[in-house]
Image (cartoon, rainbow, N blue to C red; front, side, top):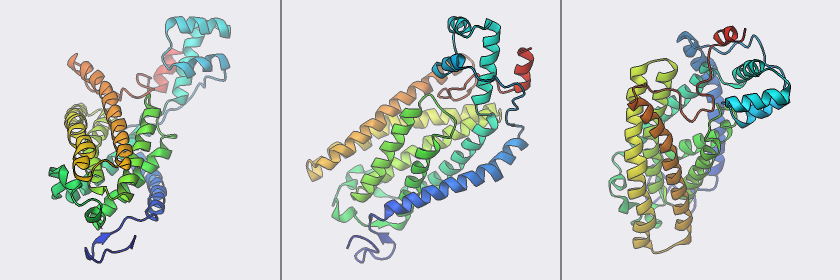
Length: 343
């Protein structure tokens, strides 16, 4: 039998089955709808109540293919690039500078837009981490990863209902991010994040269908921790709660180092590649599984460079500022203020 309730394990256990892919897809679509309603009916009113607004474009930049080509290359052109662009467009340098500022305001998401996106992710990560903590904390294999492979796969095939929901909801969320990423605020690491979502979905799907949900659930659990701190820090930034953003960033950095740079490679990757081999021998599917784990670890190290940049700023006496992955950082948020400059 490949699906349904496992008679040997009793009620409260299910078998992974191919139709779970359909379940994840439907849940992902539902999450996108819920997110849309949440941002429109809850997040936006909260953001406006906190003083955040959408940009008002009073003086649009207007079309200019030559200058648009410059903006496509960099959001922060140098003086030399602006001077060269002015020659190509047959404009004064001052006119080019004004056009660039106006164009960036047009294409830059407002603080309210970014707040809505962040509040949604904060609510989801907090909820799924709380659920994951309740589900995972008493699992013996969380503390002894060797148990992830003992009796594999016959004794790890039946899944508790609580872990079933954990997997389905987490998989649906990352699938929804795979699509919403194209409409969300653009980041410098857009394609790296896209690769992250692909690798994560591959690991979720592979570990679920292959009976490796124990290690898979550990991976989900340790990744949720840092995300809660990150979204809290970003909310603090948008709402100008300096103490909140600084404290949350400290928690984010600590959890990232401990869980993604230490625990993940030394426990998760080591267990998946070596402990499993010691018990089960070499099996091709595990090599593919290990490859995706290594991809995630490379991304962890890459993103840690952004964290280091913020740490350097903080060590210089600055507070935590906009996410350094944002393409639009340091772009003015006040249209009226910039209009005065453009006069």
